Image (cartoon, rainbow, N blue to C red; front, side, top):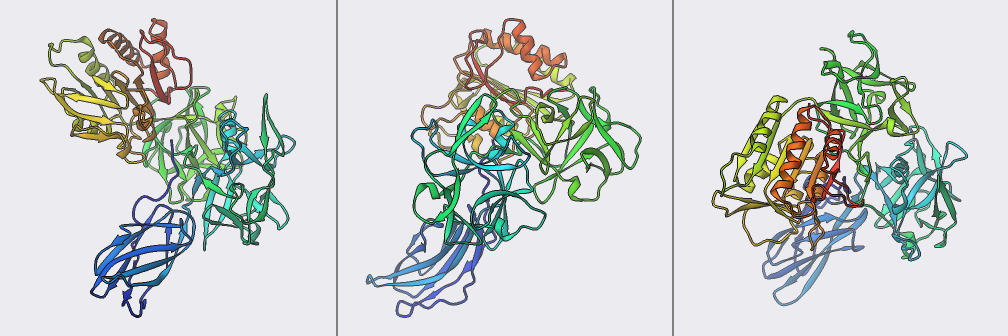
Length: 623
């Protein structure tokens, strides 16, 4: 799932040069710098001979941190990393060989939060509540179409649809000022009139009442920076009703700035909104989760404007959509009917293809649902406060009520490579499952490869490029173990770099780029315990691979026998050969007494006495 997205590459390096003498501590040639939270800039200092060390600090603490803080050099640099939003005054303390010190103010760095979608968590901990923490929520008021402001528990999101009200699109307006837009209805923003906190509808112009300043853990209204957003009381103000579920909520206020937990907020790294699994400029078939019909065009004539509908499965060009990411993290959906560029376009609440005008009514937010349940790994396509959905007449339209009709599966049009890595050194390779693998996927149009006793390095490289990746060999919690022709260890693929193993040739799933596995339709890790958390750190290989963008990942939660694995695998291949989706594959296997693998949190069921754990889009297919 998508984590809190901070810039991880270096920002444009800003050199802050300081010429220091112990006697005068004079600074010259310095300009201020603005960086993102998580990004790094560089400060430089030149000092006279006889200097023992240079130590860096900032006021207030916590806004930035320093890498290589204590340096014993006459000319040195230090990396300044943004930790929290706000302004930090940077200081250098120079100590000479005799212990004399000189402190000089180097300058001010402004740290800003990157534009993105966040959950905003209050730091107050309610010991009487399971889970203990509450999140800022734009709660849908059942009596009207507006939103009301409420505190809501992360642990009580209700169904997948309700969770969107816990997300906010935060946009930096410049100068350390931000607007907080409800992700459910992005024309409605967090507002402070001077007397009350509310959710208000705004036009394209953001008023001062909707501008906020983030300093450390405080959220301050622009129109009164001596105060900050916090809970009006640490006792619940009332209840929220969502169907049969009843939750507590808290009123909010703008009050005195203090050091109390209920006046502090963090921008959570467990954000539910994830764009993972999509490759920029790749072609996809887009299937509706409810009807299992494919997004297409109502007419195959290459006209200026064509209505969008859903149809039964086909491989025609007008069923294919190119997903193209724009500069503002939104997407265009381009239909491939002909030579002209035809883009999904909003007209009222209807959707058509139209000439590319690069206008706002051709831009969509596409994000992956990572909440556990039947629709994990599917996608919402969002336009402002509306969702792209299919109606009962099989027309594609916009709705403010996202249901299963608004969930879509993205399946790549182009077929790439598949790989099966397996271990065998004491017996001859005559197993039917081995030859069956090549036959099935080659006939489906993939470039299939079989790799007996190859290294972890080879397996890791294949994992990063394959459409389908299968491992059949030795495993353990959080890892795949590769062996050579003599049965000796030949490297490991591990879930996380925090796992400490003495062997060489270690390759870590968490080191793969954030969306580096977007091409992976299916990853099967058929080795003992490959779907189990590690004892130390709680790392899970299935989780890590899914979090890097793979559409579907399955691992085993107990020791597996060859017979159990062979029976499962042969049935799996047979159903794929029949053109079934992953969901249908498991359903067919269950009918043959090999039971459906389970997701985390559900009761364990048995797969030939072999429990399994999976994540992802089960509607995904291989044709």
